[in-house]
Image (tube, chains in turn blue, yellow):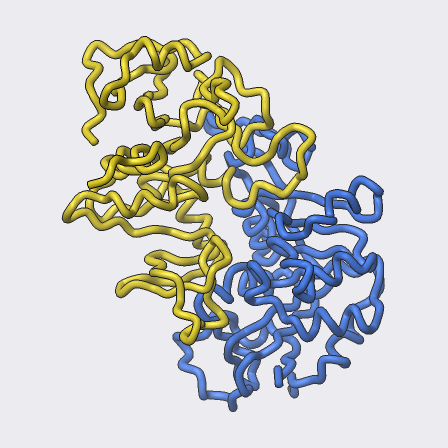
Length: 219
Length: 220
């Protein structure tokens, strides 16, 4: 199967109202070109799942400020100074998760688990907001969180081959590899020229090719 | 050596907790200067939430790797022996008890070991990032903070009034005046800074504080 498509084709697979997992931590690992194309095509009522949604000068920051996003699920949004006011004006919904909880909810969604049990956030805002449900098991308290899945996952990879095998570099990996398992459609934007099959050492592959539906070559 | 500032004194005392080869995560502010004060022969591996052990100095402007930033959003480097991994592994390390220490600042800390350091009531909601996982999962949680707030009001309280980062999570509080251990029975004053009396510490602390029988002077 030919996985290489254009950025326009990639975004045409996203629909209004979709939930999109977007890789990236401080925008490293975020496929900036795909996110800018979402903005250009005006896909709306989106739910975005990401660590921090970047900053006002990054693609994801621009998308959040554009009004096309109805809800964000994040761990931190310290660079998006206008977001709290947007939340107050009910222009957007903000759900904050502890970082370790967010990644595990995504992992649970992608790996067929029924949710997450974590001590993180007990007796805090997380529990007060009803984001987790307290359970007492094996003499300990935990917060139960539901798994997260997405209609579409978009990530940036450092290298890929035509089979869709992905390799990330340094801190580009962050949420990206795990998110690839939790999206119904998975699109990776590739920062270096896409390689023929067999060009990546099988032991170096970080996301198995069959999990990745489409590749977009970055210029 | 020039006289230490308050912050340097705190960092220097915190550094004495570490043993060679241990893994730790350092929060923003005072914790970031702790490595400058590690004793001779003590090397500590530092973990960063976005997936690094052994992050090195900031990258030189002409040698930036566009795929490599530290948890403070600076382009960085890696030390020999360091490694990179995904967020699930990062928080597995953090939550799974693989960090010997996490060192964080505090807005408020109280006598039950509750910590508030992520948001002030009515303030802008920037998010907790990894802080709640760090305090829930590290083997020991050290709060490194100035003893009182800027206006002189106590930060070490009977009960935190700000939203909590974690409930009953703190093990040690290190300030420019004292070292305080959080125990089942409450707070125990174990060390005072050179030239500081236990009375002064008690007077500047709202929380109930027991003076340890073996109270000593901070070895800084």
